[in-house]
Amino acid sequence: MSSPYFTPREIVGELDRYIVGQQKAKRAVAVALRNRYRRQRVEGDLRDEISPKNIIMEGPTGVGKTEIARRLAKLAKAPFVKVEASKFTEVGYVGRDVESIIRDLVDTAINLVRDEEIEAVKHRAEEQAEERLARILVERDLPEPEPTPEPERPVQGPAAIFGPFLMNQGATESKRPRASQSQIVEMRDRIRRGEMDEELVELEVKDSSNPFMTIFGAHGMEEMEFNLRDMLGNLPGGKGRTKKRRVKVPEALEILAAQEAERLVDQDRVQREALKRAQESGIVFLDEIDKIGGREGFQGADVSREGVQRDLLPIIEGSTVNTKYGPVKTDHILFIAAGAFHVSKLSDLIPELQGRFPIRVTLDSLEAEDFKLILTEPRNALTKQYVALMATEGIDLKFTEDGVEAIARYAAEANRQAENIGARRLHTILEALLEELSFTAPERTEREFIVDAAYVEKTIEPIVSSAELSKFIL
Ligand SMILES: Nc1ncnc2c1ncn2[C@@H]1O[C@H](COP(=O)(O)OP(=O)(O)OP(=O)(O)O)[C@@H](O)[C@H]1O
Ligand SMILES: [Mg+2]
Image (cartoon, rainbow, N blue to C red; front, top):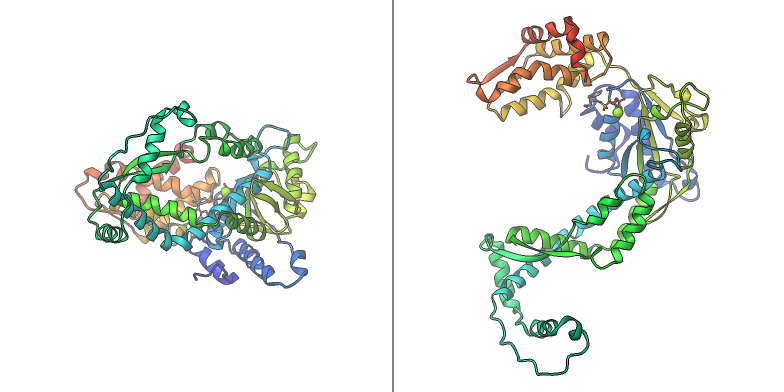
């Protein structure tokens, strides 16, 4: 399963490891992902005609919509961004404009491709870093040359401004003795044997603390931000600013290897490939799409929300967005939208937007049976998390089967009585259940702690049957 070209069945299988049920949604995203791969293998003009079938996931809160998208992204190894539709505002208003989604996607693609390229040159970069470090260490200990006395001469040129200091320094620099190849090899072997691990060396490193950036990092200033960023990059003290750091040899190796890798990676190629990746296999997850629902004239819906929907149209339909790396065509980007739609309905979205999401899947609300599985089955299941946390305190936490069943039952019950918050209810119940243990764990003498049905009932029943239940809603 190492290839990113999973079959739909394999994709569903992978998602099954983390998400219980919701088979319709899993199948839909699996097919969409596979279709990307299919399209890329279609020959000729037809390929450009095939557009992705965007998906909209509808379902109550806390049933796995975001989780499915998150897991899919990991699987796909494709540029992926998750954005909340409610964060955007119509062009002309203060706030994030929708085109920033595509710019974010390209940034993600750049990182993805750059990481791949760095991985590919890693070995060479490490070798070069060793060599550079060996040279630094050898030359550091070579004797200084005798300073050659500067002949007296009239001061002019740069020296008139910067003083004779600069000139002198240049002169000695060039006469510094250089390490021989055999000295370098010898030092390299000592580094490899770990003999130099405690040595400190001084390195020039990039100064990443840049006071200018933070000022312009605010939302809604993206256009300006990227122009300014480019400008600042060209100013002295912009991009190439460095500072000196004293570090131990192992860390120095890492820093130098990163510097070498950066030099070995062809930035232009990274950009070209990243733009292509974003265009051909980018996935945008538009969460909270229901929050921009509401048409003009509809109760309480403001113009700005409909405006956001209208702004989204061209991007989803296919248009060109300018980014600092170049223009990106959005025609083949896959959009997956999700929303709880409990206040507004899917039909409250403007028809044009609805029409751009031909595939609709409804996620099921979760019942006691699902909760039981969610508590125990996924790789990251909550009970496993608590067991691991308690193990760090030397406590052997155990959930019996009837204990898990009781938790599941109370979760379903609480969802019925109070608000239905789906699987998030499990978090609140488990917190309440294990509050005492979490607090006293370091002081306990008894190693074992068993959560069985009796314990669950004793702890949770008083809460559920009292008016206090509301305290345990998120
Ligand atoms: N079917 C499921 N299987 C396993 N875990 C789940 C499932 N549904 C939800 N969860 C867990 O519940 C939590 C909330 O799920 P998620 O974020 O996917 O909700 P959502 O459907 O996106 O809700 P919202 O509409 O509020 O955004 C996560 O921790 C997730 O792991
Ligand atoms: Mg969500």
